[in-house]
Image 1 (cartoon, one colour):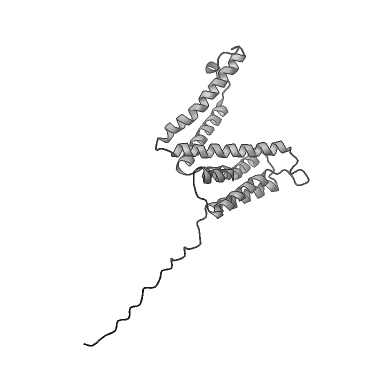
Image 2 (tube, rainbow, N blue to C red; image 1 turned 60 degrees about the vertical axis):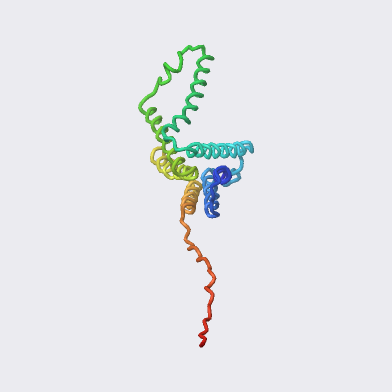
Amino acid sequence: VTTGILFRFALKKHLTRTQWVALLLLTTGATVSQINGCKGEVLSAPMMGYLLGLLSAALSATAGVYTEFLLKKNNDNLYWQNVQLYGFGALFNAIRLTYDDFNAGFDNGIWVQNGFYGYGLITWLIVLNFSFSGLFVSWLQKYADTIVKVYATSSAMLLTLVLAVAFFGLEPSLQLFLGIVIACCSINLYFMPSDIPALPIATAPPPVVNIKNTED
């Protein structure tokens, strides 16, 4: 919902009432899937936790919409735009790593020399997975929009459930199942084409001209 609000007011994009209902359903589905129980424990977390959750949602939506704005504001090559965007992240991470090494007195050397120490095959596969994930997200935001990216992320709940059951023996709860069903309904509702035919524009009938035959 926060993404839809920013999408409407920041990027001036129009959403139909059906799409707003779909976004509300998606929010409901995501919330239901995270409920642990129904015996007085649904809202047992501290209020600060809920406030921080709302703040996190707002910041995530703001970042997504602003990234879409940056990617679409010109026709630069997408890969060059990714270099510009991720360059800031690499710079700040380098500053943080250098700061940590400085506080440790450079006992283990500098991070440039031992930054990849302990990396194995699984580690590199995870790095590649996140790299391609970032590229796919940028493609979605460049050629589609942030809401499509949100739905793509939400659709991953079903795949995550299947993998968690297969590899970790997860026992799916009723809440998780209902959340997935609600999210699927939301996806179909948001992208459903309008089935109401456009009404024909009423036009006034042409005036009737009475022609009288006169004899000279």
